[in-house]
Amino acid sequence: MPPDKAELRRDARARRKLLAREDMGLKLAEYAEDLPLPPGATIGGYHAHYDEADPALLLARLVELGCAVALPRVTATDAPLEFHHVPDGAVLEPGSFGIPEPLAHWPRAVPDVLLVPLLAFDRHGHRLGYGGGFYDRTLAALKVPAIGIAYAGQEVSSLPAEAHDMALSFILTENGLLRFS
Image (tube, rainbow, N blue to C red; front, side, top):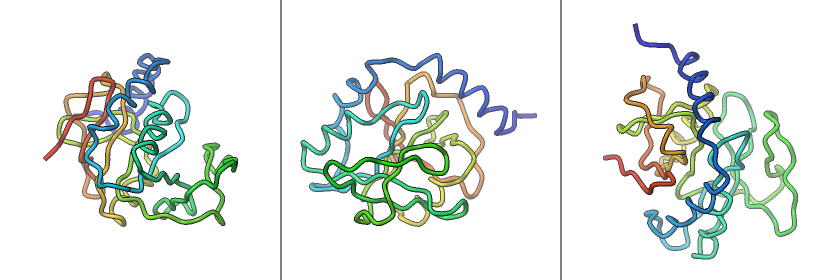
C-alpha cells in the first residue's frame, strides 16, 4: 500500500530541511532568462517560509527584466489565493499562517504565471504541497502556467495525484528548468 500524503509530507519536510542551502537564491536567479514568460508578465511569487527554496533573488531579477511581481494573501481557508502588488517601501504583515502577506487594500493583480513552493515533485509535474489546497484552487481559477520552485533533491519517483491536484508546467531547481508536457 502506498504511503499516505501525511506520511509523504513528513518525509518531504525532513528531506527539504537537509537540502536547504544559502546560495539557492543566487542559483535560481541565474535561470531567470530561461523562464518562458511573456514580455511584461505579472509573476505571482511567494515569500519563502522555513526552508523553502527562496525565490526573492529570482523575483528581483525578473523585475530587472521587465516583469511585475505580485504576492499572495490568504482570504479564506477554502478560497484561491489573492495576489497584490506591493507598494514601494511597504512592509508585508504576517498572515494566517505566519507567512508575510500583502495588505488587502494594496493593488490587486492577476498573475500571468505562478511560482509555487512545494515539498516534493515528480517528473510528471505533480507536486506535493502542504495540504491546504491553496495553490490547487488558485491554479484551477487562474488557469495560468505554474513553475514549481524547489531543490533538485526534492524530486521523488512518483506522487499520488488526485482529481483536484493541479499539475505544474515547469520546475526550477538549482540545476535548471524542467519542462512537463
